[in-house]
Length: 297
Length: 273
Image 1 (cartoon, rainbow over the protein chains, first blue to last red):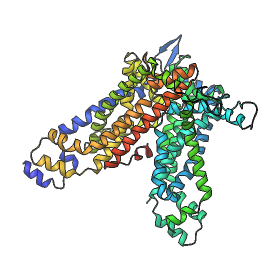
Image 2 (cartoon, each protein chain N blue to C red):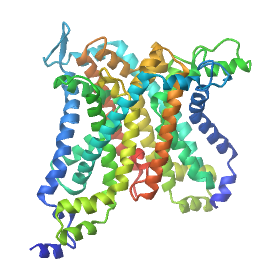
Image 3 (tube, helix red, strand yellow):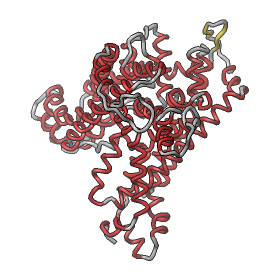
Image 4 (cartoon, helix red, strand yellow):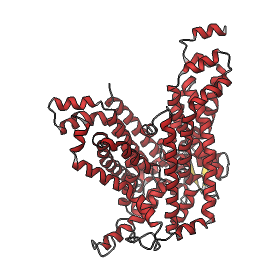
């Protein structure tokens, strides 16, 4: 029997190759673990957003009050809009820095390509906190940049608006997400068949036309992936505002954080989190569809 | 039009790329430079070279306790995420079960969602099952969130693996258990090492999830965070410089392992988060 199975098995697919027991052993532990430690926590977040806090105690009473508060309170709406502006600025700036860099590496770097590529990757693994802290020391009113400006007599007074402002948050997050945006764009550019670019030029299209009509459309999936990543992670960031943002740089995740901390209103905090989650998931879903449309073959 | 010809004709682009590189590296250079500056973290130019901050750092017990905590959490997270991630990759590659598509997406969520959402969800969960916050909750958070790193890495490895070896082993009378240990696992060795290093680095650096799960004992990033709130000294530059050096060393090891392996390209993990 076993032998017969083996002969037939020359073409058998993997689902026949492994026994039922094997499949259970490999799938049950991760399923239960992920169900218990990931699905359940996310579900709890969702459920909490429909509960209440009364006199400092959590009341398990189903209602939509939290969501109503969210929409009705202009503070939340204002902070959410500011957060989206900051995230959009970060995304745009990361693209403006990351795309030309990727383009340069892919088409013009020649023999230095591999080395330069590694150089972009290295900062990616340097601690988020360490890089945020570095910006704090650079942008502060007695920081490195102000010291530099005064040393060369560009200014005589320290420039104050650099740190503790939305500007600082944007600079720090752009710094963090530029390599992330660079990566998928670079990969997309590297996958463009070079004969296609040459054909475009042989047929008389100039540099600009070749870029706009061949290279840019073909790198669109990478561009979208990078942009989504930068936007989504900026949207939910609460550390950059705490580190360099100051009161005027408060973002939506800081509201969540304070609702879970000092304000002690977990259900309302959960409702704000669910909103962030919904925006994130919607964006991911949309870009996935867009990417599929762009990468038709 | 050859590559060599086109690479000469883009002076503006070359300068622009140099500026972007400067932007990326500026904070790191400043950080390292000022860790040797006697007069603190601000001002320009840095003068009076000193190793005092490093001396102070090495005598700082709280920092090294935090380093030890981080090492414990990262080590345990690597063990957990590798084991469960390996099983999950095998399951996704070889088994069909209800909810498979959901499972695949769910595992990836912690890498895609902002850390605060995963962190707070796990905080609510810990309160729900009345588990006090400690390094254990931090470990559960890191280990669970990083399963996806192993799964992504190993799933790609499994897809490229030659099935014939396992098939031959089974046909020649080896038990599935023997086949797993002697064929499957050795084939995945390099991917496992690479995933392990990556998980270790990510866990050592993690702050957004840890922020909500930390008890009395701090991990290194949380210890640094606490100090930042009290004011900044070049001692933080010194520890940051050391973290940077260790990260770079790990990356070099990672690439060595990676280039010898047949698995995914290192950047693929990040390309499709």
